[in-house]
Image (cartoon, rainbow, N blue to C red; front, side, top):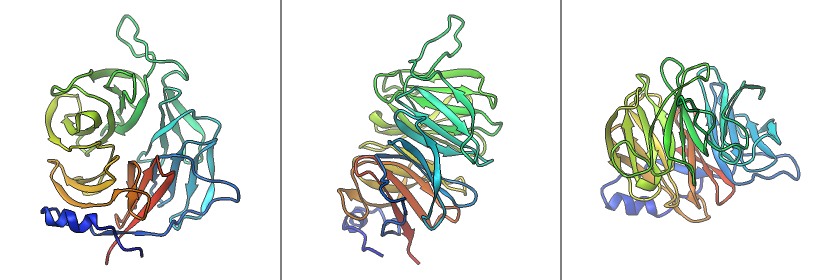
Length: 303
């Protein structure tokens, strides 16, 4: 293993313990002549297979737990890859901020559902029904199959949009601003088993918490650019990829930082933009997608 960077020691001096994970050399095997583009999304399914979502023609790639290449599941479909999630049935859900769509694929990559209209910005029917997205960033799932999509990466209005399991629009909330329940670039969303939502409100430098109907509950402050959230299996903790600061953090559900590692840069356990994060099923391995360094880094729990 490569020795972790000095930011771990610095964080410990400020009362935040080291996260306890160390970087390992690049595990991902790619076909000859193929490289990752800017890596925006990362996810792990129930079999431990790793899915890398990156900005290239072959946007969605599948690897086994050792990093061996298994194939490309999406070629020529996405304009600007962004978020990636796996649901309880191992379906893959991807967000495209270039084409303004959310795509559901089965485990073999066959498209099952498309939310939004490709290459069309958000429009609202006079009756209030959604007709499209404006740069959807990420999504999460509720206890009854609800789909929560956060949008507003660039010029798009910052909102959370709620759908039922069949993709029918239910409601939205948010809007631009810094007040409770408003957003400036809601970048990531995760849920607990009871449907509580945690939203990384990136440009407001905070995590906002809502109940499953969108009622504001509380928030925690995270100066910088909180980008990607990943809920732990105990439903009591989560990991956060802290954007351009290059920090990887473990938080409790109140937003308290329990452990930290990483820094800004181009070396091991350094990040240009720690964009999204995924964890292995045993939670001993973290995978961090870095858009600026065009790679996924792997951190392994120290014994």
